[in-house]
Amino acid sequence: MTHTVEKIGGTCMSRAPELLDSLWLRDDPYGRIFVVSAFGGITNRLLEHKKSGQSGVYALFADADNDEGWSEALTATGAEMIRLNSEILSDVGDRQRADAFVRDRIEGARACMIDLQRLCSYGHFRIEAHLMTLRELLSGLGEAHSAFVSTLLLNRNGVNARFVDLTGWRDDAQPDLETRISQGLEGLDLSSDLPIVTGYAQCSEGLMREYDRGYTEVVFAHMAAQTHAAEAIIHKEFHLSSADPKLVGLDNVRKIGRTSYDVADQLSNLGMEAIHPNAA
Image: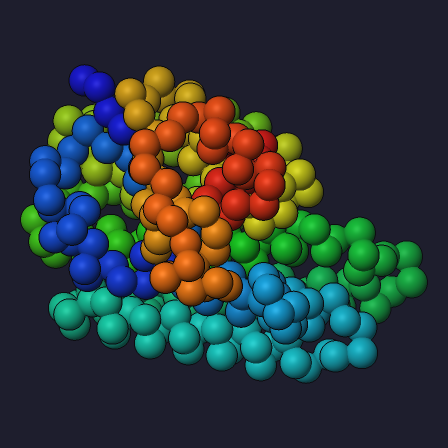
């Protein structure tokens, strides 16, 4: 059967219950693959604020003068994830599963970071050599959380959603991106399964080295091309616009209607944040 691959941005993901009627359950839920970003603000907490530069967990850890701040920031991020669980999930059992998922990922990351600090206390090991790997590990926490919670929400509403975790959590393999995607989708039937896929994929190419925080668009683009999707769709807080509504105000922008991949490619190179230039 033909299918679409659809990406949902972080701000939209934070309104997941509203997406049930407006997107996920509006038509037949199957024949689609959803690639999801972290809930709004979570990646800023895990890394650094995208626009203000305020330090998140990663930036605090990378700062050799701040030994304790990163752990406190990680705890606060976990608490925010759990707060979002209670806001999005109405079923007690679902919330308990989501909270346990958050605790496992947050405490697993904390243990890795403590071990890394201990290792690098010896002069033969340099923290700088491991920072990009850590950045990738932390990035994956946000996407895994949003995908897992969304899967629970959809399951509770009668949809056979399947959590597809491409983040490589506790996986000692190092596949390339194509293999990671193939393994994640293996055994799924798009006529009866609705894959909810993490927007971050751990792979040998190292997505953050190449694309930094544009990795979600790259995973989305590769997913669409690799699965021969009939259409690739991006769901954003705002329509494709002539300017950033958050910067200039809604009244000062014009909505761009139907367009082409070439136009999207040109706009992305001019700094439009709808899609990474290398994914356009």
